[in-house]
Image (tube, rainbow, N blue to C red):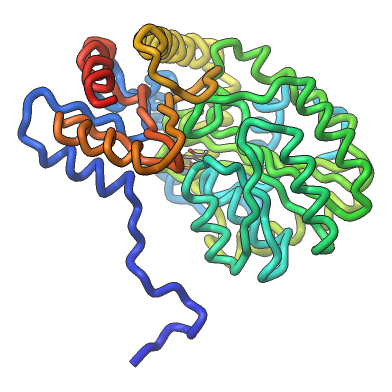
Amino acid sequence: MTFVKPTSDTSVLNDQVFVLAQKAKEDPDPNKIDATLGSLLDEKGELLTYQSVFKIYDSLDDKIKASYAKGAAGNQDFLKAVDQHVLEDRIKLYRRLVATSGGTGAISLTFKNMLETDEAVLLPHIAWGSYQTIAKDYGLKTVLYDAFSIDDLILKAKELSQDQDRLLMVINSPAHNPTGMSFKDEEWQKLISALKEIDKPNVILNDIAYLDYCYDLDKGRSYLRCFNDIGAKTMVVITFSLSKTFTFYGLRTGADIIIAQDAKAVDETANVFERSCRALWSNVNNAAMACFVKVMQERRRDYIAEKDQAIRMLEKRSQYFLKELSAAKIPFYPYEDGFFVTLSFEDNKKRDEVHARLLNDHIYALKVNKGIRIAICSVPFDKLPRLADSVKNAY
Ligand SMILES: Cc1ncc(COP(=O)(O)O)c(C=O)c1O
Protein backbone atom coordinates (compact mmCIF):
# COMPACT_ATOMS: atom_id res chain seq x y z
CA MET A 1 0.00 0.00 0.00
CA THR A 2 1.36 3.44 -0.93
CA PHE A 3 -0.10 6.57 0.58
CA VAL A 4 2.12 9.18 -1.00
CA LYS A 5 1.22 10.44 -4.47
CA PRO A 6 2.40 8.14 -7.26
CA THR A 7 4.93 10.61 -8.67
CA SER A 8 6.82 10.81 -5.34
CA ASP A 9 10.40 9.57 -5.17
CA THR A 10 10.11 6.97 -2.40
CA SER A 11 13.79 5.98 -2.31
CA VAL A 12 15.74 6.64 0.90
CA LEU A 13 17.58 9.99 0.77
CA ASN A 14 21.20 8.95 0.48
CA ASP A 15 23.17 12.04 1.39
CA GLN A 16 26.76 10.90 1.02
CA VAL A 17 28.14 13.81 3.07
CA PHE A 18 26.23 12.75 6.16
CA VAL A 19 26.86 9.02 5.55
CA LEU A 20 30.63 9.56 5.24
CA ALA A 21 30.79 12.01 8.14
CA GLN A 22 29.06 9.42 10.33
CA LYS A 23 31.54 6.73 9.20
CA ALA A 24 34.41 9.08 10.04
CA LYS A 25 32.96 9.73 13.47
CA GLU A 26 32.74 6.00 14.20
CA ASP A 27 36.30 5.28 12.99
CA PRO A 28 38.48 4.64 16.11
CA ASP A 29 41.78 5.26 14.24
CA PRO A 30 43.58 8.20 15.93
CA ASN A 31 45.06 9.31 12.59
CA LYS A 32 41.77 9.53 10.75
CA ILE A 33 41.01 12.73 8.87
CA ASP A 34 37.46 13.84 8.21
CA ALA A 35 37.43 16.14 5.17
CA THR A 36 33.75 15.65 4.36
CA LEU A 37 31.70 18.40 6.00
CA GLY A 38 31.40 21.90 4.62
CA SER A 39 31.59 23.59 8.02
CA LEU A 40 34.56 25.68 9.06
CA LEU A 41 36.49 24.07 11.91
CA ASP A 42 39.16 25.86 13.91
CA GLU A 43 42.73 24.65 14.36
CA LYS A 44 41.61 22.48 17.30
CA GLY A 45 39.19 20.72 15.00
CA GLU A 46 36.14 22.27 16.65
CA LEU A 47 33.28 24.10 14.96
CA LEU A 48 34.35 27.72 14.54
CA THR A 49 31.77 30.18 15.83
CA TYR A 50 32.05 33.96 15.93
CA GLN A 51 32.09 35.42 19.44
CA SER A 52 31.03 38.83 18.17
CA VAL A 53 27.92 37.14 16.76
CA PHE A 54 27.03 34.72 19.53
CA LYS A 55 27.55 37.25 22.35
CA ILE A 56 24.85 39.34 20.72
CA TYR A 57 22.71 36.26 20.08
CA ASP A 58 22.97 35.23 23.75
CA SER A 59 22.08 38.75 24.88
CA LEU A 60 18.81 38.80 22.96
CA ASP A 61 15.70 38.91 25.09
CA ASP A 62 13.82 35.60 25.35
CA LYS A 63 10.79 37.31 23.89
CA ILE A 64 12.71 38.20 20.73
CA LYS A 65 13.95 34.63 20.44
CA ALA A 66 10.47 33.25 21.00
CA SER A 67 8.64 35.63 18.66
CA TYR A 68 7.37 35.02 15.18
CA ALA A 69 8.96 37.20 12.53
CA LYS A 70 7.07 40.36 11.56
CA GLY A 71 5.94 38.86 8.26
CA ALA A 72 6.30 35.89 5.92
CA ALA A 73 8.95 37.72 3.88
CA GLY A 74 10.99 38.48 7.02
CA ASN A 75 11.69 41.57 9.12
CA GLN A 76 12.25 44.78 7.14
CA ASP A 77 15.32 45.81 9.16
CA PHE A 78 16.88 42.40 8.47
CA LEU A 79 16.23 42.66 4.74
CA LYS A 80 17.75 46.15 4.68
CA ALA A 81 20.82 44.94 6.56
CA VAL A 82 21.25 42.00 4.14
CA ASP A 83 20.98 44.33 1.16
CA GLN A 84 23.65 46.59 2.62
CA HIS A 85 25.94 43.72 3.67
CA VAL A 86 25.82 41.82 0.38
CA LEU A 87 25.60 44.57 -2.20
CA GLU A 88 27.37 47.45 -0.41
CA ASP A 89 25.67 49.99 -2.71
CA ARG A 90 26.98 48.32 -5.89
CA ILE A 91 23.53 47.80 -7.43
CA LYS A 92 21.48 50.72 -8.68
CA LEU A 93 18.47 48.71 -9.90
CA TYR A 94 15.23 48.29 -8.03
CA ARG A 95 15.16 45.16 -5.89
CA ARG A 96 13.20 43.32 -3.23
CA LEU A 97 14.40 40.87 -0.63
CA VAL A 98 12.65 37.90 0.92
CA ALA A 99 13.97 36.10 4.01
CA THR A 100 14.34 32.36 3.61
CA SER A 101 15.14 29.22 5.50
CA GLY A 102 18.90 29.29 4.79
CA GLY A 103 20.49 29.31 1.36
CA THR A 104 18.64 26.07 0.59
CA GLY A 105 15.32 27.85 1.15
CA ALA A 106 16.42 30.72 -1.10
CA ILE A 107 17.36 28.31 -3.90
CA SER A 108 14.26 26.21 -3.36
CA LEU A 109 11.89 29.19 -3.69
CA THR A 110 13.52 30.13 -6.97
CA PHE A 111 13.41 26.62 -8.47
CA LYS A 112 9.80 26.25 -7.33
CA ASN A 113 8.53 29.49 -8.79
CA MET A 114 10.54 30.15 -11.94
CA LEU A 115 9.87 26.96 -13.89
CA GLU A 116 6.92 24.71 -14.62
CA THR A 117 7.06 20.97 -13.95
CA ASP A 118 9.10 19.16 -16.62
CA GLU A 119 10.97 22.29 -17.66
CA ALA A 120 14.76 22.14 -17.27
CA VAL A 121 17.05 24.16 -15.00
CA LEU A 122 20.63 24.78 -16.14
CA LEU A 123 23.17 23.50 -13.61
CA PRO A 124 26.98 23.33 -13.54
CA HIS A 125 28.21 19.81 -14.44
CA ILE A 126 30.09 19.65 -11.15
CA ALA A 127 27.96 21.11 -8.40
CA TRP A 128 26.55 21.02 -4.91
CA GLY A 129 24.33 17.92 -4.85
CA SER A 130 21.29 19.66 -3.37
CA TYR A 131 20.55 21.44 -6.68
CA GLN A 132 19.60 18.06 -8.15
CA THR A 133 17.56 17.15 -5.06
CA ILE A 134 15.63 20.43 -5.19
CA ALA A 135 15.07 20.16 -8.96
CA LYS A 136 13.71 16.64 -8.56
CA ASP A 137 11.43 17.71 -5.72
CA TYR A 138 9.76 20.24 -8.02
CA GLY A 139 9.61 17.85 -10.98
CA LEU A 140 12.22 19.78 -12.95
CA LYS A 141 14.61 18.33 -15.48
CA THR A 142 18.24 19.40 -15.53
CA VAL A 143 20.60 20.43 -18.32
CA LEU A 144 24.27 20.55 -17.36
CA TYR A 145 26.79 23.11 -18.59
CA ASP A 146 30.55 23.02 -18.19
CA ALA A 147 31.01 24.57 -14.76
CA PHE A 148 34.17 26.39 -15.89
CA SER A 149 32.94 27.80 -19.18
CA ILE A 150 30.69 30.85 -19.56
CA ASP A 151 30.69 30.13 -23.31
CA ASP A 152 29.19 26.71 -22.69
CA LEU A 153 26.57 28.19 -20.37
CA ILE A 154 25.64 30.73 -23.07
CA LEU A 155 25.44 27.96 -25.68
CA LYS A 156 23.27 25.73 -23.48
CA ALA A 157 21.03 28.68 -22.52
CA LYS A 158 20.47 29.55 -26.18
CA GLU A 159 19.76 25.92 -27.07
CA LEU A 160 17.33 25.48 -24.18
CA SER A 161 15.53 28.70 -25.08
CA GLN A 162 14.41 26.97 -28.29
CA ASP A 163 12.53 24.37 -26.23
CA GLN A 164 10.99 26.27 -23.32
CA ASP A 165 9.37 29.60 -22.56
CA ARG A 166 11.67 30.70 -19.76
CA LEU A 167 15.14 29.91 -18.44
CA LEU A 168 16.66 29.43 -15.02
CA MET A 169 20.43 29.05 -14.73
CA VAL A 170 22.38 28.43 -11.53
CA ILE A 171 25.78 30.03 -11.09
CA ASN A 172 27.58 29.24 -7.87
CA SER A 173 30.30 31.88 -7.90
CA PRO A 174 32.45 33.14 -6.27
CA ALA A 175 34.01 30.16 -4.46
CA HIS A 176 32.07 27.44 -6.25
CA ASN A 177 31.27 24.31 -4.25
CA PRO A 178 33.06 21.91 -4.75
CA THR A 179 35.96 23.35 -6.78
CA GLY A 180 36.64 26.87 -5.46
CA MET A 181 36.28 28.36 -8.96
CA SER A 182 35.17 32.00 -9.29
CA PHE A 183 34.04 33.55 -12.58
CA LYS A 184 35.88 36.73 -13.58
CA ASP A 185 34.04 40.05 -14.04
CA GLU A 186 34.61 39.83 -17.84
CA GLU A 187 32.94 36.43 -17.90
CA TRP A 188 29.91 37.80 -16.05
CA GLN A 189 29.77 40.73 -18.50
CA LYS A 190 29.91 38.33 -21.44
CA LEU A 191 27.03 36.29 -20.05
CA ILE A 192 24.86 39.30 -19.28
CA SER A 193 25.37 40.71 -22.73
CA ALA A 194 24.72 37.33 -24.43
CA LEU A 195 21.47 36.88 -22.49
CA LYS A 196 20.12 40.04 -24.16
CA GLU A 197 19.99 38.01 -27.37
CA ILE A 198 17.51 35.57 -25.81
CA ASP A 199 14.00 36.82 -26.37
CA LYS A 200 12.46 34.97 -23.43
CA PRO A 201 12.44 35.63 -19.68
CA ASN A 202 15.70 34.33 -18.24
CA VAL A 203 16.76 34.17 -14.60
CA ILE A 204 20.27 33.97 -13.22
CA LEU A 205 20.30 32.33 -9.81
CA ASN A 206 23.58 33.47 -8.28
CA ASP A 207 24.38 31.28 -5.29
CA ILE A 208 26.74 33.25 -3.04
CA ALA A 209 26.90 30.85 -0.08
CA TYR A 210 30.69 31.34 0.19
CA LEU A 211 30.99 34.99 -0.92
CA ASP A 212 32.00 36.15 2.55
CA TYR A 213 35.08 33.90 2.49
CA CYS A 214 36.74 35.27 -0.64
CA TYR A 215 40.41 35.94 0.12
CA ASP A 216 39.94 39.47 -1.24
CA LEU A 217 36.44 40.49 -0.13
CA ASP A 218 36.28 43.62 -2.26
CA LYS A 219 37.46 41.87 -5.42
CA GLY A 220 35.09 39.00 -4.65
CA ARG A 221 32.10 41.38 -4.80
CA SER A 222 33.20 43.50 -7.77
CA TYR A 223 31.28 41.38 -10.33
CA LEU A 224 28.02 42.47 -8.68
CA ARG A 225 28.22 45.77 -10.59
CA CYS A 226 27.73 43.80 -13.82
CA PHE A 227 24.13 43.19 -12.72
CA ASN A 228 23.37 46.89 -13.32
CA ASP A 229 23.62 46.12 -17.01
CA ILE A 230 21.15 43.21 -17.27
CA GLY A 231 18.71 43.29 -20.18
CA ALA A 232 14.96 43.79 -19.84
CA LYS A 233 14.33 40.03 -20.05
CA THR A 234 16.88 39.04 -17.42
CA MET A 235 16.25 38.78 -13.70
CA VAL A 236 18.93 38.07 -11.10
CA VAL A 237 18.09 36.23 -7.89
CA ILE A 238 21.00 36.28 -5.49
CA THR A 239 20.69 33.53 -2.89
CA PHE A 240 22.30 34.53 0.40
CA SER A 241 22.91 32.33 3.42
CA LEU A 242 23.85 33.08 7.02
CA SER A 243 25.08 29.49 7.43
CA LYS A 244 28.71 30.28 6.56
CA THR A 245 28.55 34.09 6.79
CA PHE A 246 27.55 34.06 10.47
CA THR A 247 28.36 30.40 11.31
CA PHE A 248 24.56 30.03 11.67
CA TYR A 249 24.41 26.62 9.93
CA GLY A 250 21.61 25.28 12.11
CA LEU A 251 19.74 28.55 12.62
CA ARG A 252 18.40 28.28 9.07
CA THR A 253 18.30 31.85 7.83
CA GLY A 254 19.07 33.42 4.45
CA ALA A 255 17.48 35.58 1.78
CA ASP A 256 16.67 35.98 -1.89
CA ILE A 257 17.68 39.30 -3.45
CA ILE A 258 15.50 39.82 -6.52
CA ILE A 259 16.82 42.28 -9.12
CA ALA A 260 15.50 43.34 -12.55
CA GLN A 261 15.10 46.42 -14.73
CA ASP A 262 11.32 46.27 -14.38
CA ALA A 263 10.15 47.14 -10.86
CA LYS A 264 6.75 45.55 -11.50
CA ALA A 265 8.38 42.23 -12.36
CA VAL A 266 10.44 42.41 -9.17
CA ASP A 267 7.38 43.13 -7.01
CA GLU A 268 5.45 40.34 -8.68
CA THR A 269 8.28 37.86 -8.02
CA ALA A 270 8.62 38.99 -4.40
CA ASN A 271 4.87 38.49 -3.91
CA VAL A 272 5.04 34.99 -5.34
CA PHE A 273 8.07 34.12 -3.18
CA GLU A 274 6.38 35.51 -0.07
CA ARG A 275 3.35 33.31 -0.67
CA SER A 276 5.64 30.29 -0.94
CA CYS A 277 7.36 31.25 2.32
CA ARG A 278 3.99 31.34 4.06
CA ALA A 279 3.07 27.97 2.61
CA LEU A 280 6.41 26.24 3.27
CA TRP A 281 7.80 27.51 6.59
CA SER A 282 5.52 30.46 7.40
CA ASN A 283 8.34 32.72 8.57
CA VAL A 284 12.03 32.38 9.44
CA ASN A 285 14.06 32.44 12.65
CA ASN A 286 13.37 35.77 14.38
CA ALA A 287 16.40 35.57 16.69
CA ALA A 288 18.78 35.01 13.77
CA MET A 289 17.34 38.02 11.94
CA ALA A 290 17.47 40.23 15.06
CA CYS A 291 21.03 39.12 15.76
CA PHE A 292 22.17 39.93 12.20
CA VAL A 293 20.72 43.44 12.46
CA LYS A 294 22.29 44.07 15.88
CA VAL A 295 25.73 42.79 14.90
CA MET A 296 25.71 44.94 11.77
CA GLN A 297 24.70 47.99 13.83
CA GLU A 298 26.85 47.49 16.90
CA ARG A 299 29.65 44.96 16.32
CA ARG A 300 30.30 44.98 12.59
CA ARG A 301 34.00 45.86 12.91
CA ASP A 302 34.64 43.12 15.47
CA TYR A 303 32.75 40.62 13.36
CA ILE A 304 34.64 41.53 10.17
CA ALA A 305 37.96 41.29 12.04
CA GLU A 306 37.03 37.91 13.50
CA LYS A 307 35.89 36.61 10.13
CA ASP A 308 39.08 37.90 8.55
CA GLN A 309 41.09 35.67 10.89
CA ALA A 310 39.03 32.71 9.73
CA ILE A 311 39.62 33.67 6.10
CA ARG A 312 43.38 33.87 6.65
CA MET A 313 43.29 30.46 8.35
CA LEU A 314 41.51 29.02 5.32
CA GLU A 315 43.91 30.76 2.95
CA LYS A 316 46.92 29.27 4.74
CA ARG A 317 45.41 25.79 4.49
CA SER A 318 44.51 26.12 0.82
CA GLN A 319 47.90 27.56 -0.17
CA TYR A 320 49.74 24.73 1.54
CA PHE A 321 47.52 21.99 0.17
CA LEU A 322 47.49 23.31 -3.40
CA LYS A 323 51.28 23.67 -3.33
CA GLU A 324 51.61 20.05 -2.28
CA LEU A 325 49.24 18.87 -5.01
CA SER A 326 51.00 20.96 -7.66
CA ALA A 327 54.45 19.70 -6.62
CA ALA A 328 53.21 16.11 -6.90
CA LYS A 329 51.51 16.89 -10.23
CA ILE A 330 48.14 15.77 -8.92
CA PRO A 331 45.41 17.41 -10.98
CA PHE A 332 42.79 19.55 -9.28
CA TYR A 333 40.07 21.85 -10.55
CA PRO A 334 40.65 25.63 -10.87
CA TYR A 335 40.60 27.08 -7.36
CA GLU A 336 40.35 30.75 -6.39
CA ASP A 337 38.57 30.86 -3.05
CA GLY A 338 36.53 28.80 -0.70
CA PHE A 339 36.02 25.87 1.58
CA PHE A 340 36.91 23.02 -0.81
CA VAL A 341 39.65 21.79 -3.13
CA THR A 342 38.60 19.12 -5.61
CA LEU A 343 40.94 16.57 -7.17
CA SER A 344 40.08 16.08 -10.82
CA PHE A 345 39.78 12.79 -12.72
CA GLU A 346 39.14 12.02 -16.36
CA ASP A 347 36.79 9.23 -15.43
CA ASN A 348 34.88 8.07 -12.39
CA LYS A 349 36.57 4.64 -12.36
CA LYS A 350 39.97 6.07 -11.43
CA ARG A 351 38.21 8.41 -8.99
CA ASP A 352 36.58 5.42 -7.27
CA GLU A 353 39.94 3.63 -6.96
CA VAL A 354 41.63 6.64 -5.40
CA HIS A 355 38.66 7.23 -3.12
CA ALA A 356 38.77 3.60 -1.91
CA ARG A 357 42.50 3.90 -1.18
CA LEU A 358 41.90 7.10 0.79
CA LEU A 359 39.18 5.40 2.82
CA ASN A 360 41.54 2.54 3.48
CA ASP A 361 43.96 5.08 4.91
CA HIS A 362 41.16 6.54 7.12
CA ILE A 363 40.81 9.68 4.99
CA TYR A 364 37.17 10.70 4.48
CA ALA A 365 36.27 12.93 1.52
CA LEU A 366 33.28 13.26 -0.77
CA LYS A 367 33.06 11.81 -4.28
CA VAL A 368 31.69 14.26 -6.86
CA ASN A 369 31.31 13.82 -10.61
CA LYS A 370 34.89 13.24 -11.88
CA GLY A 371 36.34 14.46 -8.64
CA ILE A 372 37.03 13.99 -4.95
CA ARG A 373 36.16 16.98 -2.81
CA ILE A 374 38.54 17.72 0.03
CA ALA A 375 36.90 20.01 2.57
CA ILE A 376 39.97 21.95 3.71
CA CYS A 377 37.56 24.05 5.80
CA SER A 378 37.30 21.15 8.23
CA VAL A 379 40.94 20.01 8.37
CA PRO A 380 43.27 21.78 10.84
CA PHE A 381 46.60 22.90 9.37
CA ASP A 382 48.69 20.38 11.32
CA LYS A 383 46.80 17.49 9.71
CA LEU A 384 47.40 18.70 6.16
CA PRO A 385 50.85 17.08 5.66
CA ARG A 386 49.36 13.65 6.40
CA LEU A 387 46.36 14.43 4.18
CA ALA A 388 48.61 15.53 1.30
CA ASP A 389 50.85 12.42 1.69
CA SER A 390 47.85 10.14 1.71
CA VAL A 391 46.46 11.75 -1.46
CA LYS A 392 49.88 11.37 -3.17
CA ASN A 393 50.06 7.68 -2.20
CA ALA A 394 46.49 7.00 -3.26
CA TYR A 395 46.89 8.62 -6.67
C1 LIG B 1 26.83 25.76 -2.87
C2 LIG B 1 25.95 25.92 -1.67
N1 LIG B 1 24.86 26.68 -1.80
C3 LIG B 1 24.03 26.87 -0.78
C4 LIG B 1 24.26 26.30 0.44
C5 LIG B 1 23.21 26.63 1.46
O1 LIG B 1 23.32 26.18 2.66
P1 LIG B 1 22.25 26.46 3.82
O2 LIG B 1 20.94 25.98 3.37
O3 LIG B 1 22.79 25.67 4.95
O4 LIG B 1 22.25 27.92 4.08
C6 LIG B 1 25.39 25.49 0.63
C7 LIG B 1 25.66 24.81 1.89
O5 LIG B 1 26.40 23.91 2.03
C8 LIG B 1 26.25 25.30 -0.47
O6 LIG B 1 27.35 24.55 -0.38
